[in-house]
Image 1 (cartoon, rainbow over the protein chains, first blue to last red):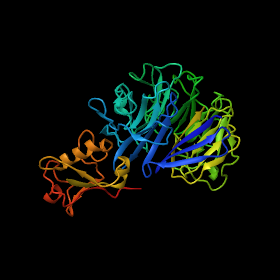
Image 2: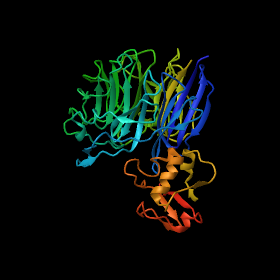
Image 3: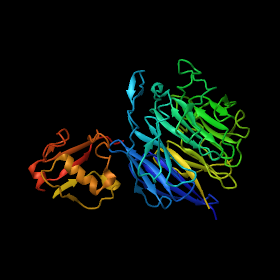
Image 4: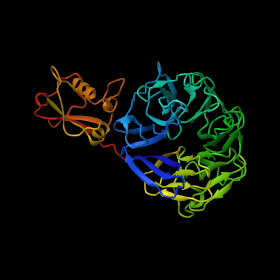
Length: 371
Length: 98
């Protein structure tokens, strides 16, 4: 029988939650790397037992861990992230030039075809890649160097490259997103880049429709229709039908269009999930009701999903990398909260249950569907 | 042999069990001692001092003989008591948890 492995990164370690295809009983393994912040961990699509984890703390900085047995055991990999050439400057919060300084890896994105190739999105924003299983990391400098890098400015969480999407139909096409610079696309495997932010409107920058400066929180894609992108921005839920060339707002009837997480149903490219959050300062669900909103129309029309979720006195947040789906026949949807709960739905969001309840604050959730 | 005492999170990272004793040729310094430590435990590279600048990470401290050696030049000789093994060299995680 097929199974599911949920990879959970938290403020104080990583957890692996396993279940069979029924997704009723869950076995919780961990904490791995207890005491360390695990911003993200993810498995290789080409080898589900190969996992990579980003591990950091304020004492000893960045580590990368690698597992070859599905998270049972781990070995440190390379942790040397050095910007290519003279790093130069980006803008600081006060608008002054600030040298690029590596702080941490926010997101690891294993190649779709090679277990030894992994992309890493880092703070201060840059894209790195390893082709030897994480031992050595090289920056792809074309992103920072394409022309707008010196104008990028950090969001409240830092100048972080947090989203990496690989087009399964075109090995050269990669999408990334940076807070607070915006979305960018490469069509040549990451060597050259250009901003793809036309149609975004952000009232918190001097020119709301500027080419860069938008605080994109997350982008999601359905692998069968990779030219359609869904974005949760600082405010606004957006959609592009042309690989990011232009965006239109699809916030529709959401109670608030602020939020972090967004994902797409595994089998229905027009079924999208978001978790509305009250506002940029109030990082909790409106009215204290934790609701996932689902659109079956590719945005615009949204329905609240509440069955099994707390509907009173709930003031947790759901961070940008903390939602994922499995690809079983009945699509499973998963998300983690800053309150340490991991919620799962085995029926595409119709009903939910907590499969872990008292973990440290959840930073990321990824799902592997196992044969 | 020089004894190096590491904080728990670095012992876990490098999968160290038991005490750490290192042979450092010549007059031991902070730099030569950390070079020897990282050679034996490669997972510690970048976790005590920066990969590129080789500067001590801000929230790591070096103590020995009831003294804070954190601000000593990295090529200054370590205290005689550390060099002879009479006193350990302590790598300390500063108060920076959360």
